[in-house]
Length: 296
Image 1 (spheres, rainbow, N blue to C red):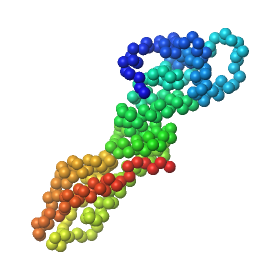
Image 2 (tube, one colour):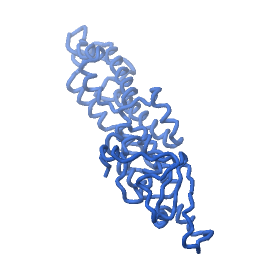
Image 3 (cartoon, rainbow, N blue to C red):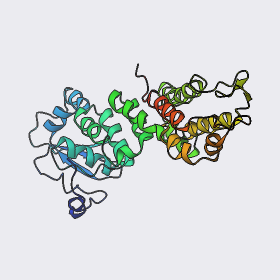
């Protein structure tokens, strides 16, 4: 669907104040002017059939419409040449530009929404779930929520589980979200952490409340190593709510984990924790956590 990079480089660059070389047909009866003064000569029929905004505009009485040889009137729009070119390529059936950056697609989406052009929006919607766009899940989530793309928003929310939303580098993107979208995303990350935290106090895990005793000899035991390990697990879920790093390498390499697996009863000298069972149950708990936002 995308144009090859080499092809786009071989095309002449439009000059400010001149006609764009891809949109210079003499039989075009409409000239659109970008805000950086590049002109695009296109057919009004194309605009009317692909844009609700232009269709409504041309349904109004046109001054001088009875004059056959009246020169095309230039309509200046708010978009720059790059955005207008991408938009018109899509509606005119030309090879589309490389849409591999949110800095490129966001202005195109804004223009497509403004001019009521469902065609370009559907093209971009199909591309945002491919690389490299999918590698920026927060920006994908922001776009999907803005335009009501449920499947893409839920998928993007799942991919954000590798991120710490409190990190400073995500602040600018989070500020673009609506209140509902922002709360839904924070809720997903919070629920995963809190659900796991509560589950680690249920059997077969040791509960922090009350005295505990060795399962072999019944001697009272201080399970401080398990409490410390639980704290490290929850902190890791804060940093990476996906939880994939908890079991590996976390429960294998963390100092708190090693201390927990080596802990023994001071009376019978038996290990206090079954490492294999504990790791398996923790992994199962993480796998059962919710993975996407709830779309209302």
